[in-house]
Length: 448
Image (cartoon, rainbow, N blue to C red; front, side, top):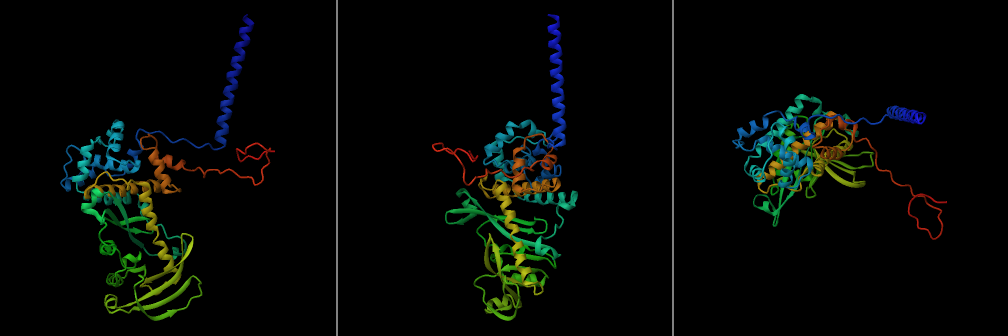
């Protein structure tokens, strides 16, 4: 009996030793094969790590300057709730308030932020001046630029334009559809309401240099003055045909600013000179002068008219461009206009990753609060992308952050090691598969 017990103990000891060796072997193999490291844990939620880049106390300072009542609901709590709405994709006030109540201890640890009630939150959106959010955006922009100068540095232009050592700016607007409750201030059509975000984008670093939020009733060309106010001598302006204002374009030339725009179909020119080029994508390169008296008075000088074949969505399309630069090659003019499409990419990022479809307020102030905090959320995510050296798509970054908002992991470390998986593996379809007659072909695996 004793011998049998001894054998059992020895067997058990050998089994434990075998399991120990198996565990060590598995660990060595994993280390050798480069198993992905897990993100480090931290005491702060991902949401807290994102808003830490907002200078401490600046939100309440800006609110007091605008005379906002922040005694019961602080301005920082207000901004934090709206930022969470964008980052999480929350579509209503109740959804934001419920999430904050469920995670109230974590919310309170973010600079003492409070959990708002629905009516309090709604009242803040409706009554507080959205200039607070606008000033906050540019304050945070300047702060990030000061602590990380490479974030806003000129990145260089890609492809054909890498030799062009100039600051290039694109201007455009994007329309945000609103509900009929907003029609009193944002009437766009007879039974539609919409707001517009007008933007000046630095093509070199893909960051805004000016933004304005207003109703969609005014034509885009009315905002040319404010959009181009900060442009300097030698800068290049890119815009669509909606911004063709001959008098303003002539004033840009007087300031030493170059421009490339699409010509309007209704413009009439007299050809002064014409250049021949061997490039098959260049149809014509002409020096022209305005034919109609009214247009000639607005732009008394000459313009360059370049007609080129440009690839748009995989298809060749003929486009006509006007510019006041006579030294660039016609190919450079066409490529400059192609660079204007970076602002379309910027607007696509905003609309696809932020909550700009469902608004949590209906009056003008509430909509502007949501748009400006949306721009702020986009800025903070772009900064995370820059610092972590994220190389994948922006939408994937936003999705990763959305999934981890209440997790207590190191965000920058997570972004450095996550997102490296390739695309989904598609099954390989074998052309002629062998199978027995009468049996269904349930999979892509060949039989026989």
